[in-house]
Length: 280
Image 1 (cartoon, rainbow, N blue to C red):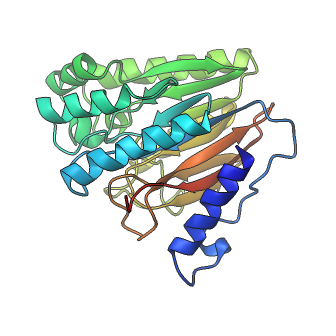
Image 2: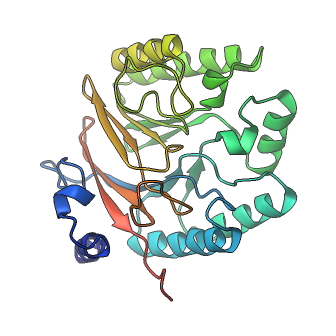
């Protein structure tokens, strides 16, 4: 396992030519200083159809095969599962996803439920994929899969219900002294917590409310997609990470995913893993 990760990291460096390892990988610790508790993979924007439909079907399948070989405890996908919602894209996504030999937890993205979600679009997602927000408890950690579309473009009735749930699960995790990892599609912010609202972030007032909630309730990581480029931030001890995609990266990084190693008490480190088999 360790040698496999080392080789894929080296391959990622070679793929970008003259870029140094520091340029392809952010300046974060790559190894835990505490005993390993578990590992998981973070995928972003499989988005079948974004980089070319057949391309994205192929790369998603390659990622499933590669992640299975690496044997993490589970994988999360940070939204935009497909690019255009239709029976074929959902069927292809579910068929490829079924190849995972480990649990796969999906967050809903704007391409999955709409830039402005409706009761109908949410119902369709729930019928095709499953719940659009829920929690997973794993080895003392609480993973909160939330629906950022209900923060980005509030839907009466649904957003209030989602907010009540989100506050409740954070409070429950705090009582258990369970570190929380939030898994979503939209990042709270891209560059700074006080940046103006744009297509890539959550509205300012809601963003500050959520940052406060996360800080007060033991959130240690906030994992997102949507940007189609690597974004690594930190806010008062919370890691905020948007990873690489398997569809199309806007920053010319290789296709791939993030690998997270987790220790007790909220200690987590991540690294990039380049997608194998692209030239085959």
